Length: 89
Image 1 (cartoon, helix red, strand yellow):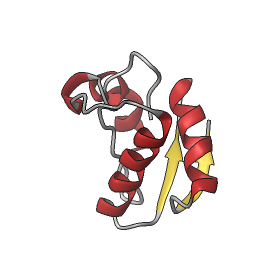
Image 2 (cartoon, one colour; image 1 turned 120 degrees about the vertical axis):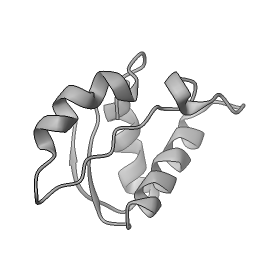
Image 3 (cartoon, one colour; image 1 turned 30 degrees about the vertical axis):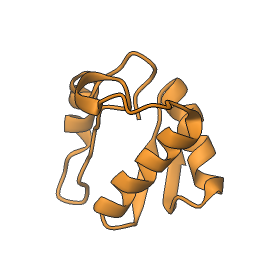
Image 4 (tube, one colour; image 1 turned 30 degrees about the horizontal axis):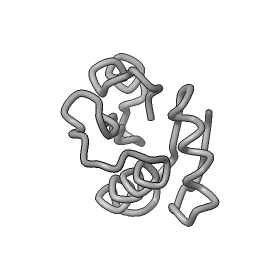
């Protein structure tokens, strides 16, 4: 999860470094950024719900890396019940 101003395109270079036979990397536009849309109301809870939807689509077993405010959201998501196997911020 990127920071406040980051888009999936910004996250592509480090994501590409992680893409390997053992990993599939998903970089997505957070709510209100890039192609992420801006469905109101925008709140931490809504962004945690967005991450939960991405995790579900990915198969429900993920490692999450969050940068800056994306790290704060990742830290909110894990104890909120989003199934995160590993977390780095």
